Length: 206
Length: 90
Image 1 (cartoon, chains in turn brown, blue):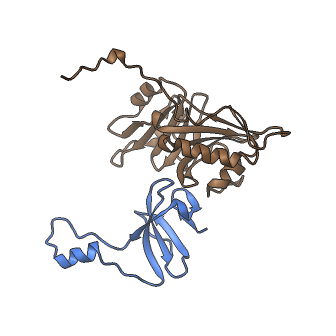
Image 2 (tube, helix red, strand yellow):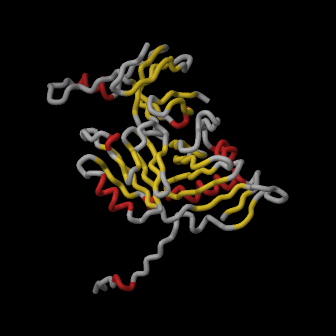
């Protein structure tokens, strides 16, 4: 006889993608050094992928999310204190925010007939890396051109890191700060790739 | 490392891209009577030229867009790239 599942008995625990990988503390060659790299997991983000349908006649320049226009130039990010909108492809954007009510705003602004809206909040592992050696760490695994005149704050790029597809979001400089997005299932592997590259400079996992 | 210019993202490393085959092959028109030989030619048979070749490439680890590239198959020199609905500048 089959037992009925009692939903009240289920305890759903929200486990972050790097829950089993991200250990706090100091690692690598950190002794007698100032301003070592800082590494953290960015949790509880709302991440939405917005893709405009080819048949849609909506003008992207006319669309804005809480006064934030969509980036029309490739590889750029438009941001304010609440959200960052990343250009990830032609007519394709990633909206990232800590605001849990973003879902409602997005569905109000982006019509289902014109845009494909996908909530990918739980399918990405996000690492924040900051410090003067951040670019050196990224250069070790990614073929992207990180020269100052090519990749600046509020630029983003889809690229690879040791063969793992990632999105790099250049948040700010001096010291350089990047958000790195990888698929959740690659999160552990990506995290260890990054931390291995950090060991030479020493890092603090916070 | 070879660099390929994606029409959307600019110059990127070759390992972000995936080769997509000959860009000059046209699928037989749907609804028309097609001989087995024509289907064979479309599905299986490709020229293997030495020199300039028009190809499809996919920026698979980048913007995920397909585009056309004009490349020398002997020297690997890439002469030009363009969007699918555009023509080469050369």
